[in-house]
Image 1 (cartoon, helix red, strand yellow):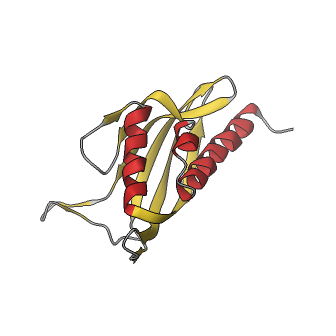
Image 2: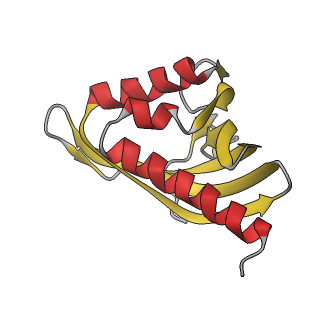
Length: 146
């Protein structure tokens, strides 16, 4: 019989899978169900922080406005699960076809997740997406591979 921690990790991974599915289907309703109402997101797009699920969903709506088709993948997801909170890190890549028909393979970013458990449901309370910075030029390095 799996331990509670194993069950919780499985549920968190299922939430990440649902985010991937929601992005591929461009389903904002499904995506909104994966975050706490007061989620704080440090995304790659300005401003420095996006507070609340509506702000997070506006970021995804912006992506959907630019992309005709969306693909998203997560690699190397590592989780540390506690009683009611968990954190994880992974690499993510958004790719697809832009509205003008241009195909893009996207870029790999670093993702950090903070989860809260309510009942049996794990929701993202915080996420941070970043790219490495070339200190000399002040520009993001977007051609790295995991």
